[in-house]
Image 1 (cartoon, rainbow, N blue to C red):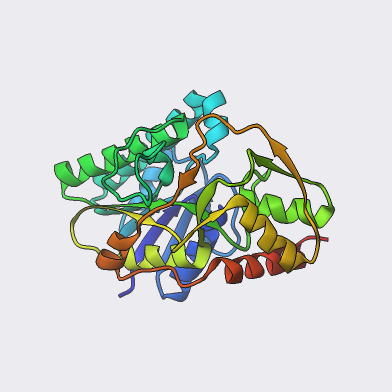
Image 2 (cartoon, rainbow, N blue to C red):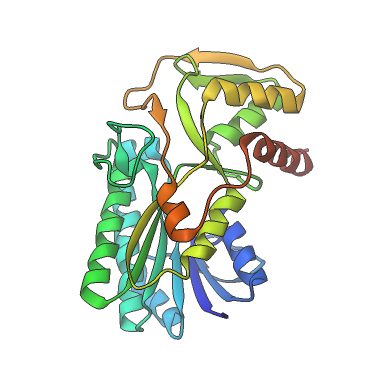
Length: 301
């Protein structure tokens, strides 16, 4: 079924992939982002400017809200920036939707809402005690969305991703583990890891995450929240070993002290997404890393 879809943050890593897939599935897509993206119609503005963005919501069937600051470490240094942008930005989008009677809202939540989980793999109803302001913003965003579902009959979908990775990841500076490790090993730079590398994380490939977003468009009225995660937790040091094999180079691993507030194990139970969305990840870590490395090889001099 053809839909008119508005995406916020469509010029980011996930946003670009999502916009392309939505277009190829036959939907009309409008992107609102501070950065340009030549492949879809893009309004370059800030979602916080409600008066400016409001007009673009008329006649839309669904909104994917991806516009967020995403660096947990930076959020500790600059909490106000994170709360203002992520929470008030979400409110601005929800209000624009309410005024134009757009009722379907899907957004990026995060594993960060769980903080240090009591149990792994994490189920959706594990306690949520965030340990950084970024996690707080994601939890507040979930609360805002569920309140609009109750108050105005919205359909709200919170997709809680774990460690998303894949081709096209280009944050500046790059703080995400996999692209950073690829660059460091390639250039022969020190590969910096916190602690002994035994931290286990749940890596999930970009195409799998995008597929879940498309499936989520079909959910019925109500508030839905679910984990999107890989099938296995992998230690950081094992990821580095896999990349050494793919790149054919040895990593100069440099160990730093354990970071406070860095859970040793952070991985999820994604059985709810399997049940509700009929979704499970299809791209294993080795295949995903191979594709990611190929992308970096063709895009860096």
